[in-house]
Amino acid sequence: MNMVSEVWQSHRTQVTFAIMATILLFVGFNQSWPLALGIFNLCVISSIMALGVNIQWGYAGLFNVGIMGFAALGGLSVVLISQQPVTEAVEAGGFNMLIALILGVITVVVGVVLHNKKFNKWIVFAAIFLGFFAMRYFFADGANAIEKVNPAGTGYLGGLGLPVLLSWLVGGLAAAAAAWSIGKITLGLRSDYLAIATLGISEIIIYVIKNEDWLSRGVKNVTGLQRPVPYELQLQQAPWFQDLALTVGFGVREFSTIFVKLCYAGFFVTILVGLIIMANLALDSPWGRKVRAIRDNEVSAAAMGKNITRQHLQIFVIGSAIVGLAGAMLVTYNGLLNPTSYQPLRFTFLIWVMVIVGGSGNNLGSVVGAFIIWFLWIQAGPMGLWVAEVISNIAGEQSAVTLFIEDRVHHLRLVFMGGIMLMVMRFSPGGILPEKNKEL
Image (tube, rainbow, N blue to C red; front, side, top):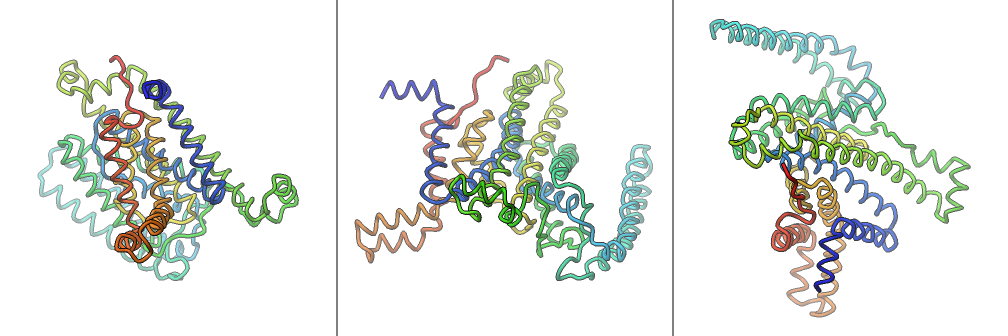
């Protein structure tokens, strides 16, 4: 037992990733390779999202529970950048929306200038009030006209028709811009108030996306999004691909799905590896040591002349940008924007569990936590059915225990989550891959 413990402590990272690879291979051989690759791709996207949260919490101790708002902004960017514009909708209400946008910007600028020049507060209020209603007049007319254009098929402006990979970058930048605006207001708050504020602002973002149909069709969803990889049907009709499928021993239809998922995996893994390398380099730099010093003792860091608020704002923006990037990747992979899917259970609770289980402050821990939690989230149903079958064989099909488990098998994923967290907190409080102690 001592030898096993020593091997685990000295090769914890290698052993953990080897176990992850073995589990995926087991799923591929015993269930299907498309399922294994699908789990892998979603685990990588979740890893990127968890990495963004880990940078905020593990590096700086910022308790952000507005994760799904930044992920939704990333997903919305895919629609606004990569979708083709709806010409009829642009002609019907595009001009009014442009005027409303210009008036909104002018209103904000005028309000800020008047406030900075110490004008009477009633004058500032009057300027904002008039500007808002002028903007609202054009906005309401434009939105109504746009939403009346083929509401069953479109009913929104569409996008710019640009490459979908560009939307990933824009998604990160949009989340970063939102984080900067939110951070300027909330980062002076205590940690519990910061959590409440970020959650509330996140809900506002989701509410806007769900209800402004002219922007993203609301709850009617946007489907048929661009993808950076070939379509399965095109591959199935290509002679070179048919020959390749025959060579590797798969059917053409199954291999087309595997090939597409492998292409996605190449994009996702490249981005994840690049982000981890940059994050580790930043953590090992003087900037990273300063960030950890602020996290561990803000009073001492402030006494040494460090600007705590500015440093927190940097971290908040960087982490949110990574979450926005992951949100754009997820929508592209799914092929649709579904605002109703942005639930706190999935985009806040699960991501935080990934960070805690993997190891707060350790970037590779985010990958491990994302794999474990997402794998359990996907495979909880089959695992629950297996548990129910085992109990049935032991206790009988009509036993009270068997019937109790069968009725609640789909809720076992929450039991698995709680069990994993309890085990990790009991036997490895720092997570599976804890943060390494570094000299400041």
